[in-house]
Length: 287
Image (tube, rainbow, N blue to C red; front, side, top):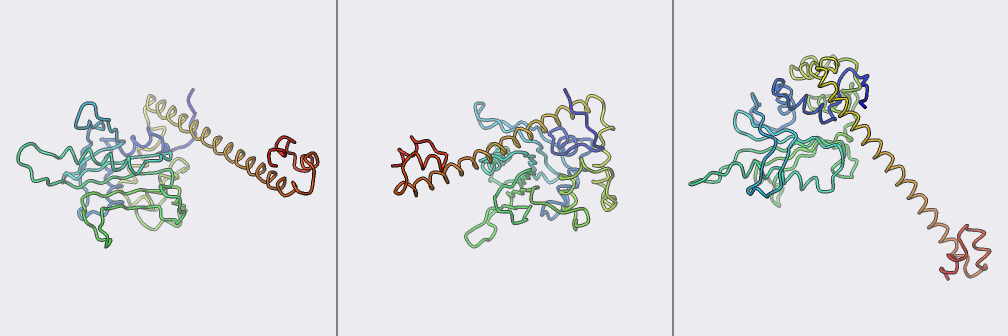
């Protein structure tokens, strides 16, 4: 059973939506525009080539790395773009692990001087990679020395923490703001905001993102993916609710025990049990 979508535009936080918008060879101008607005690069990206998403390790038995999007530009710079909806304990480790594949891929047989092309990892996250609610939705990571000077500038990590991005349409002040607003709100919009119409990439995105413009088989695939995301959200919301209730119950039980301990020297077990709601056996164990 599929979810009948009522939104005009597809949700970019579904697997289908993200790859349809940003991993589409026919509309690669969208990804080029996004990367140019996000990354600190001296020369703007003119063209990209999508690479095989499945990269094998050095040995056939090594673990495979499957990226959402893996591409190179005309200067052979490498870009890994990952959409991650749920928190992972070792997501930072995963980021480092993924960038090891385009590094190894550049090795050459015979006489090689170890020269490497640039690698950029972009994580688009529906969670905060850190617990500090400081409003810093973009975290850029580079290899630096003890004096905070960049030691190696060919390996960069960009983490977009979308829950920290809370700007309304009227507050958007730059191109990156526009992209992050789209990630958070595209499927809630009825029309393309006027301020976006000067961007060729955003015009293309809003055209491609229309649900009714999708072929019937792709509409079905998107609805299945949307249902999976909604089901997952419901499971996670219920788990959080149960955890909160369990925590409150444990807190109440702890408070009862503390009260009982304070009454041990002045009341008998039965009276303490009546006043706290704890069983007589628990009161006796406290003694």
